[in-house]
Image (cartoon, rainbow, N blue to C red):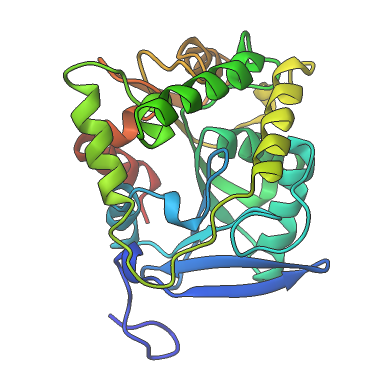
Length: 286
């Protein structure tokens, strides 16, 4: 199978070329892989994340049969502009990026903050989205979501003291199963060795954290308006975005299915990538 421009199809995220496109004065960096044609799957990334933060064990299986697009949020990584101060603004930025690519319909795969942005996007532009994957995330106004700021700073401190990647603390349980899963995840993120992205700036990170807190303290959205088939997944011990919020999403989005993985945290889908990736592939379909 070959891409429409006769380039060989790239199905490894570690090898996906980085491209740029300009929309409303912002130049967005993005990577695409998988066979073109059909409805693409657009990946919405987490707090402080760049293009280099997607687990290849999740993204590669989806790209075997689907056109996949991952992008840097405005002001993050190689994307220009200023980091938006609210989740709604981030959703508007995502819409500008997607429409600049000329896409009329997409599927969304989202994780954590990306899931918050995805919810705002689908509520504002329901005809754009066919299917929705919400992982490690929760609804606007969700109980205790505003505590993510304190949890994040505490775990960054713990990671600094042990010279570890903060994601090892934030995404995984600190036990006999969580610790090796964390190390393996962080190692997988290093599989791309060339043309790596720029790290998130500290001011941008703080702006995103405040945007999440505002989202957590806002009035609830009417999630009954989300009628798209929706897959919701998390670990059973998410300290960042409490696991009960995944159950809350499932109750409020009628056409949804819920997967909760045992003995795992915020990064449950990464710890159980061998089980979750086939579920995501089957759900997204063609």
